[in-house]
View 1 (cartoon, rainbow, N blue to C red):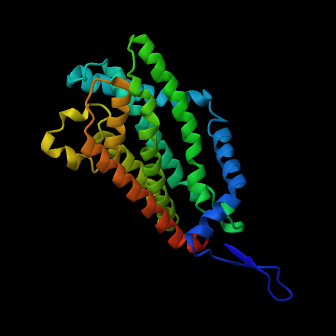
View 2 (cartoon, rainbow, N blue to C red; view 1 turned 120 degrees about the horizontal axis):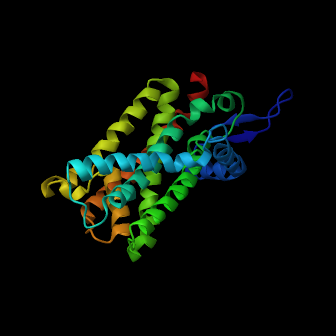
Length: 279
């Protein structure tokens, strides 16, 4: 927003910033608030829980056990030459991060309603800063993956250093959908119920409990319309080293994640001025 002096009786007028450059400068100007909100989310997330940060390990661990039993033992799906728990957990790691990040981002404006309705700051800070607490959870869960590999005496591929390349589109996708759903959720509270349902459905249509190699070749590109398919395949390619990366699907997923991210920013900015009216 821009500020300018006015006649006596008033200090300033707040007007919306219109250019992208002004918008970026404003976000930089409020960077201290961004980090304060992110740190607050990290501190309070598990403050009143019995096991604290262990929840970031318990949730993916229990999911891994269930998927291993259902898909590995009962359905006996192929494991790409690696222990099935590692196959599942290497996919559960990015999926858990994505779903948690999207969930917190989508609810950030409603949870931050007292701030939105009383003071001005770039509203985009709320759904963006909420992501950082999930990054901490991801790092803690990654430690468990390392322990699993030690337990199964599994040596990861040297390509593991490429994980940040696939971590980025997971973050952009979560942020993009978070911008869309957080803005829509303020006006239509139904999205508080729609988002968890969509994430639950997404868990089963994404290659988390199974390898995407079971998808027929003619459907692989269509299957990659789900941007998390390329992310999950990329994580497995980095960690396992026993699969071939389906490059058209990875590229397709990356393009979709960028489209979701930038369209989310554009939509959020378009309705940002009216957000306080619905809170």
